[in-house]
Amino acid sequence: MLVSNVAKTPSVPSPDGFTVALASDDALKAAVELEADGVHSRHLFTGSAVSIATVAIGAGAVMSEHMALAPILIQVVHGNVTMTMDGTETHLPEGAIVHVEAEVRHSILAHEPTRLLVMVLGQHRTIHEQERGA
Image 1 (tube, rainbow, N blue to C red):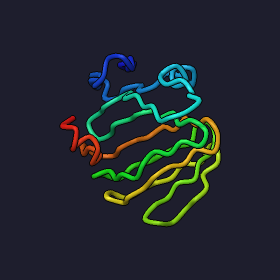
Image 2 (tube, helix red, strand yellow; image 1 turned 90 degrees about the horizontal axis):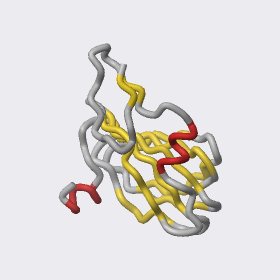
Image 3 (cartoon, rainbow, N blue to C red; image 1 turned 180 degrees about the vertical axis):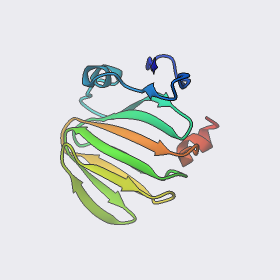
Image 4 (cartoon, rainbow, N blue to C red; image 1 turned 45 degrees about the vertical axis):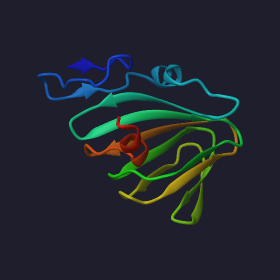
């Protein structure tokens, strides 16, 4: 078994066939501090068919509209947000998990300091990453 160190990504699967991508809630909290404003993210893990990041969004801040080239799962770990997907607003309280299909445009407004866990399923990158050449 391999335990992923967030400072050492991408992680390599262990010979056992699995990887502990994040060992605790405290490790997630330490990866990206809740911020008073703005949007801050940190890549946590890359596996064979998933990439995981954490995003902190300050109260009233907006993660601008973008899309992923692969399906994603977003979990609201702390706080609450309104997510707009293809023009439809959905309120997501703490604990909510939303699945977004590939190429669906979406933005996120945080109503309070918020921490998200974002899982990109597959080996694709977001449009933002593609534009930056990441």
